[in-house]
Length: 270
Ligand SMILES: NC(=O)c1ccc[n+]([C@@H]2O[C@H](COP(=O)([O-])OP(=O)(O)OC[C@H]3O[C@@H](n4cnc5c(N)ncnc54)[C@H](O)[C@@H]3O)[C@@H](O)[C@H]2O)c1
Image 1 (cartoon, helix red, strand yellow):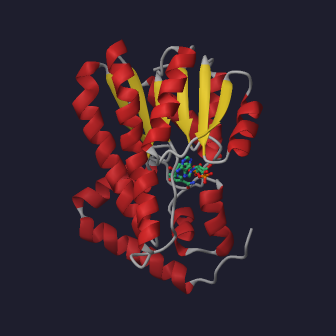
Image 2 (cartoon, helix red, strand yellow):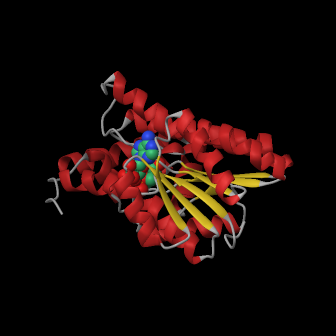
């Protein structure tokens, strides 16, 4: 898919990666970019900065009724949705001790929001004979997120769901991509780095921390090639191969990194 004249929806559109995707899609000549995020004012402000093709709407991506309304309203205004980016996501920064409410929120935003997006957007796409779903998952969904059990479990589920959708709908003209970045300089990671959180330090030690614009570049390239797995950090492919070929060795390597980081003094806040 190229983005020229496309109608695009992006959940989590006011955030770091979502707003970078919006800017990049607008620059590529998208006909409309609908940004959906929780806070109406923040979303409208980001949309205004993106330009006249962008529209900001307050939507909870984990609420099926609101996602259905978002899709219906977009189709009514613009006639179609060519690309739906299920990008909203939440991290918890904790292990299995996370409160059930935090597990539930991670499950609802990182997984069920993708189910709701697909349920709402697919009927129109199938009727028109084509469309693209891009789900922002994470390298945590093909590897792990040390220090964040709900994030790891739900991002693995998100990759599994995206793969299932890709296999099930490809022959009906639907393309599905799983965007799986590792470290990206957005509040989600920056807040963890600022407090010296182990999860954030492991991510920073495992590869480059990209800018959201670099992730958007990789997304546009992956969409152009209609690739399923879009890895803005190419090294993640190597880690995933090592994990598949030698899970025990891969886990041992990661444990060693964690021990090294735990022993090292916490870097000062940025
Ligand atoms: N930053 C990273 O290092 C990194 C790495 C891999 C994957 N990701 C994923 O990228 C995606 C975007 O994250 P980001 O890094 O831009 O973080 P971010 O915190 O800047 O943006 C996330 C956005 O999602 C929105 N959001 C959260 N819950 C929502 C809901 N229920 N409905 C609508 N919007 C909601 C937030 O308001 C926020 O604007 C997430 O899915 C995240 O898991 C981030």
